[in-house]
Image (cartoon, rainbow, N blue to C red; front, side):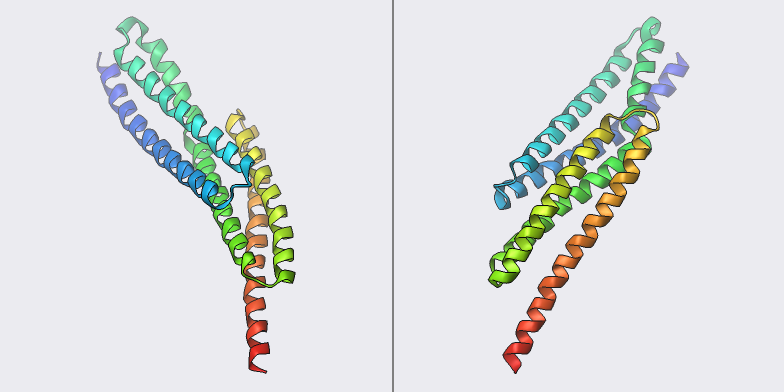
Length: 200
């Protein structure tokens, strides 16, 4: 059946492309989890979230692979039905929603790395600065956990509902980027003040 041959060729390309993305994202999640274990042993919730993310990605990868293989092995009588299920699943995990999810997860993983770095910097700073930074880090961790929870909610959302969650996530990530940037500036200003005192 020519229609089937053409469709399966296109499906193979799309499947391999999506599998490649999922593998790459799975790798990033594993790497972020390792960083979290090394630098932030106290963040058990973060490690738990990453474990859930890794398990979700693994399930998606196995499900996509399974649906693709089922389609290619289906009899001609069943092919329309099986290819329809494959198409539905492909639409579910691809396009704008998947791309935004990956982008947002990369940012959240980066926030974890930045928080670890700020915590390390705080250990080598004055007591006053250290107390301030630790208080801010606690707030950042809460924000990051809320963002991760919202991202998990977005992944499960259907229809256009995910776009409403997306808007809130974008606002939350921008707030976190600004807060982290301000904390780095605090370290820089603290260093300049110390240098000025040293020169007087």
